Image (cartoon, rainbow, N blue to C red):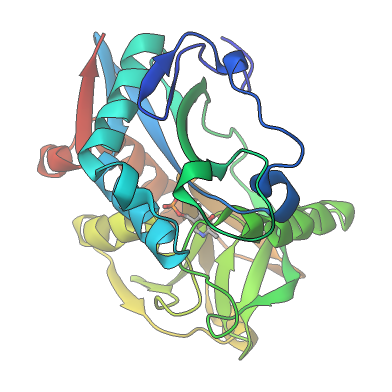
Length: 303
Ligand code: PMP
């Protein structure tokens, strides 16, 4: 197994497959480096006999276009959704790595003056690197210092610069002895994690914050759709942080971690992780193509 950051040598950039990611270089004065301009998307594949399955390819590409449009990046002037989908499949096929993390990066990679957004300076690349799911199954989380607030920031897109606050919060959490951070919104409701959405469990009901101050996660959307298969109702509503102790369990969901049970938030220890683990198993079964009714979520690449 290669190391997690061992990028597959074939990448797609601006319409072409290149033999080596090293053939792309970005100057230090590029807008993406100076100002954090850019948007990105991430998705995963699971190994099957003779190839791999991409989880919710179309939905991830749709969110990339949503992010680009919202940021006024002229992605639609350059590429169609279908072209980016094909580029993703092509990178996976060329690299033939069965279980990959795909990164689509829209960046402004030339020396360009000031803040002007120009399609001449806009690039898009698709990379793949091998990545396993985390082994850790019981993370401890602290409350982030900053808040999620859709009135002042674009919480519903994957814009590159925004992730500065997220990396700050994760680092801060680690320095405090926790594994990750949980954001609240401006009204002290639970919002989302760093790179994840959250579900909380009370009896046979899952609770998750509404799409107001959070990223509309593809994994969150999947859980909303398959929860009833496991006998759970889901309620999307604001969850005041002050009511945390009413819940027996919580878990994060996201492309990078799948479903990850939370053991503790600040001082509060949850009494169980069973529901999280049950959802984790079911999610993996879906992504591995073992649950027929979700086969439309999977795009097969045959090696
Ligand atoms: N919230 C944020 C802020 C994220 O960065 C992510 C990761 N994309 C998520 C939630 C989870 O989204 P998804 O399930 O689409 O990966």
